[in-house]
Image 1 (cartoon, rainbow, N blue to C red):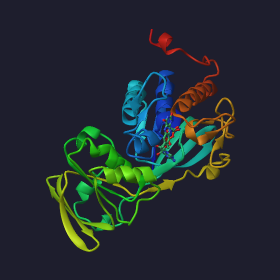
Image 2: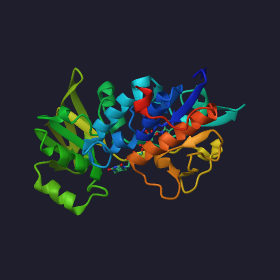
Image 3: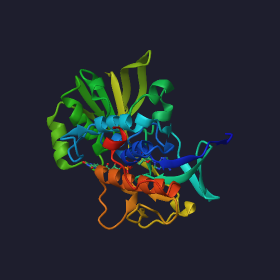
Image 4: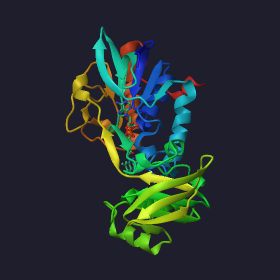
Length: 332
Ligand SMILES: Cc1cc2nc3c(=O)[nH]c(=O)nc-3n(C[C@H](O)[C@H](O)[C@H](O)COP(=O)(O)OP(=O)(O)OC[C@H]3O[C@@H](n4cnc5c(N)ncnc54)[C@H](O)[C@@H]3O)c2cc1C
């Protein structure tokens, strides 16, 4: 693919999790020209990928909020001053060229920035599909099959099939049991991985139908709507009605090559100063990727770290800028 060279921005944020999203809002509130690059096709990082249906109780201002709703709010806030947001592209290279940073992505974009904020969490997690996935028909439908439990209302009153070999699938089945008309859990293996005994007990006490040693062999799709799934259980063919399919078969981590970028790493994290500076002048870091004494890996910690990082990136570009601002004063 041809390489595209973009105009220089004040700050590039690598990673669109909760930390990167809040940083994008804060930096644009401070009138910085910002580009955020997220490897996944969705924003929200781990919260959206692993906790969309979970209720979060420890984010200030929200007595309780689902992961999905929190991220929706954060996207709305981040977009208030229109940062440029690129999704589905992984930042592979970072080099310093004449006081500017040049970043290169997997899709061949080359972007330059005066400063950089690394908000990559633990890297990018790609959810795996069941092993028989490539042999199954309906590629357009398959693309639309979720690997996270979002948009819960979509499952209300539906016949849901979950293909999973792990505790995640068991958790989804138990969560959806009260909402869906029928929940069926199909596992290619003869047991679930990493699942607690009490969850297995709850599963057997529930109305969820469970099949083991199952292979999916066909889908019946009308338009793009699923109507049936064909499975083979220990060689025996079973066709079941199904309106919704979800799959979860573990994760593959795409780690960020920080050493190649010249960024110091200790035990997988980036050590930062109290101003959230990395060892590379002009490159800041915040959120789950950083390490310093007293670091907590919480959503709210990422917010304050992002504020510190953005304020000091701003000061590097404009040493006369104020160290911090109140939003109540900016929007007066
Ligand atoms: C099971 C579980 C429960 C939790 N419960 C809570 C809780 O109740 N309360 C709480 O406060 N916190 C909780 N957390 C922690 C919280 O999820 C994290 O602190 C938070 O998600 C960190 O956000 P982040 O933006 O720093 O990183 P992430 O959410 O990991 O986001 C990083 C983003 O960067 C992207 N990325 C990585 N590398 C690249 C690259 N090279 N190019 C482009 N994009 C890239 C990734 O795709 C990802 O989207 C929980 C975590 C887990 C795992």
